[in-house]
Length: 104
Image (cartoon, rainbow, N blue to C red; front, top):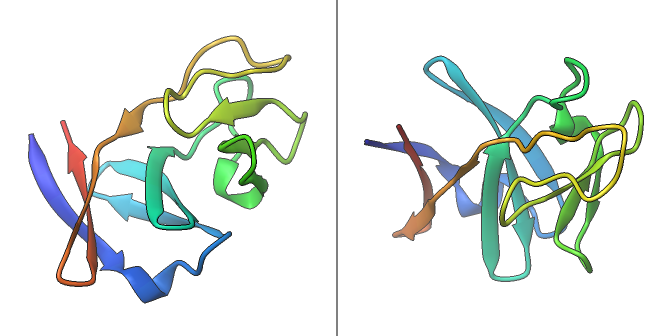
């Protein structure tokens, strides 16, 4: 497991999502309140970037911009069709105003 520095906390404003390439892994990093979440940035229904979708802060989900599947930022599980497979989730750590993600 590798701990990768992604960005500073200011790079992803509260209520927004950004995409980052960490080696061969692309993650969508979401910021909601005091929490950051990292999930795989590719919808499991079609090859669409989830970071381009809407962040649903109230339900802690990210909505795919193409067909509307909503993925839990905590588990990666889609909560609506057409997607049926989960996206990977990653542990996020904050240290000295920097955001780190654990990559397998």
